[in-house]
Image 1 (tube, rainbow, N blue to C red):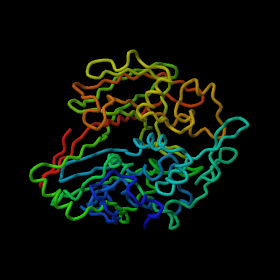
Image 2: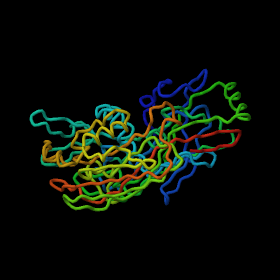
Image 3: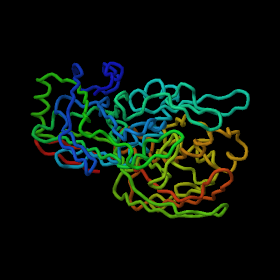
Image 4: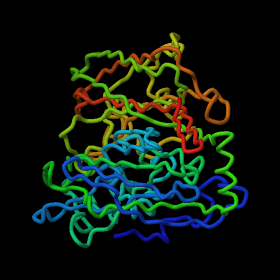
Length: 456
């Protein structure tokens, strides 16, 4: 059970920073699960302590399901990433990162740094996403490309063009660590060789509800119709090999001074947006306690309630709540001079969150205001994506380079005053939501002589 590694890896050092003075070859190590629990739907891995762990490391997974379901498919937006409910990394029994629903945090980054064509041509072979559109020049409407894993036919029917994800012919998927909450590996490879007698453990917990990540074209999916094949999951880690003399020199230096690995960690804070009423304004005040932490970014995701499902996107969605009015208090002061209400300004603020890159999705998919529904042309047979991927993000970096010193130090709880006015013409925007706040803060990993500390 494996993916085509020759296609997956960038054999070279272009995907990592310099590992040392004289970096060597990249080793690829396949590691089976250390522990596995079917009742908890969870597996753990011990990472090999060799060289520098790179961002190309990934997990190989497959799915199992009911034999009587002939056409089960992964959602088109995140593919197999959506099956991961929680990911934790422990370094010497200290929690380095702990993030729930990492796929929802990855969507804006996936669809801003890649075009739909790049995602369909490359990432679909590894994570299973395949949301590629074509535009009809006659009326400007969007439809699914005919060569997708599924395609939209006339009359609203969905046609599947690949085998069921749970049968023997289905592919093996590769879930990169950098898309599961360890995106700090993109900035610098991790010196796992310094751990000595300590262990680096990765814990993956998977969703027990198949509606979170899969769907059945033209049918209804049940919660237990698909699951991850736990016994056959494996970690495929890539390590930059360092000369032995350099490793010994670095390990010896730990006796006098610990090695430091700064990173930006992301964790989840959960809240709720209650059900609203058509054309009636609704205001919620959210408080996030992040005192004494250096805040870099904040992402708001409006996730559908558990148990709901959607053709094509499953539950990998952030539903547009209607016209918005947003104000924040950071360290007791208003973050904006006046509340932001214009959709174009909210778009620009979110673009700053994405480092100046916008999401490569149609405007009907990323917004759900009255303007979009009344004035944009949408196809009557392809309404599933409308208002399904609406995110709100904020950037708190101060312009400095690096990690520590580049964010905003929080001296009090931040307050987010969020108002919405839904209009349920054509699509319901007034429903209740789970509001997920993904908070990105600075962290410091210190590796001493068999001593590990993690601090903010």
